[in-house]
Length: 149
Length: 415
Image (cartoon, rainbow over all chains, first blue to last red; front, side, top):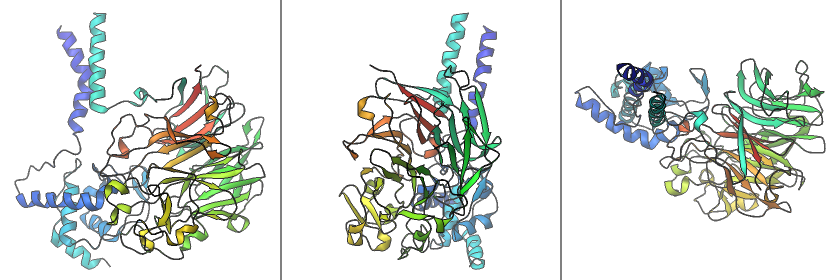
């Protein structure tokens, strides 16, 4: 009997492990931080995301194969905030490569969004879909915008 | 003990399915009564268009070079119905593939190549470039092909744009008028099928005002060209189109080119299937109803719901399938991505009956279930996405998938 339980646990192991790492993506954004300004920024960011970004990048940040890049744990979303802010301000019309896949749809420049909206939406993206990265502040967006023409 | 083991497996597979959805091999394709299918290719990478030679060899164009080739050939050497020989060649990714008069034609996103078939073996060491230097932007860059019976090849050249706006996909940005992209894209070009090194100046802009057509076929019953247009995106950004309507607009269109120079209206117009008219795009002053200059744009012969992305078109000329399918059109839909906030749909193969060269009834779903689940929020959740269609020498229908690289052979054995 012990053997049988062992075999069962062994067989189920991959499922259990995978289940841990692959949490449902649309689950409410979880923040371990007690910082309530982070929470409210994320909440505001989700509204911006739903209105501006969701159609292309999808409700779970998974993007569209070959066209619109995913936002799930990529070097873009988790990496340099400067690059990320510029991406939103300037848009994109070239090929983006992520893990050997290319994405080539046009992203319009979104410079009409306010510094607050850009900070919020990027903070939301960096703390959703399995991402966990520092918040983007209004001051950071402001500084990059000043340098971006 | 044996019984217990069986029980474990049952529990295991139940949990597996619960947690991860279906595995590719569990996906069942639903077909009308009397039809069966067989998986003849798997994990080929992005399998785009497909053609089957008269000896049964299957050629598939891959979107990118994988494992040494951008073209895969599947062959059943001993005639037992199973593929036992897979070869790869061609150092370019692309979409289009066709066979005509002893040649295999294939496309990259900028060229059309052909290979002489010598005793059914393509002369892979001596590809000829038939057309070169075609425009390929960052969207709608793939080239589809078909050939007529008069020595011509037709190549789709998609417009690298949504609606030819001054700034692409920027809400409110005005449309360019006239749209300069139409000179080299946004249409279908005709070239000679046997002349080397042709470029734009050697071809004819055979049809224009087509944003992006991927499904393409020459209908031998009507002796005309048919194309499946991918309609524009982003109407939901304009206030006169609520989500409930814009998810279905514009129609995905089946176009028939009856004479050289036919104009289907992009980027100025889109087809509103609810009122049965081409109407002005908002970038050109449209408001969902105004027709204006679009009165001159040619209407589709069949309109499908929006955003389903028709990637494959095939007029069925075989006799294996029942009478109703003969000379009718199969259309492979890739499935939508921009229907949010509503769910995505259209991962299917449709059928349109034809009589005397005209659609003779409503379109219907022929093959479904490719997505592996019924309700999808995002296209990434689809296990398979239908792309290409071909007819085998025995009249079977082949369907490719460019998500996992599966290929199905659909046959009729009902009574």
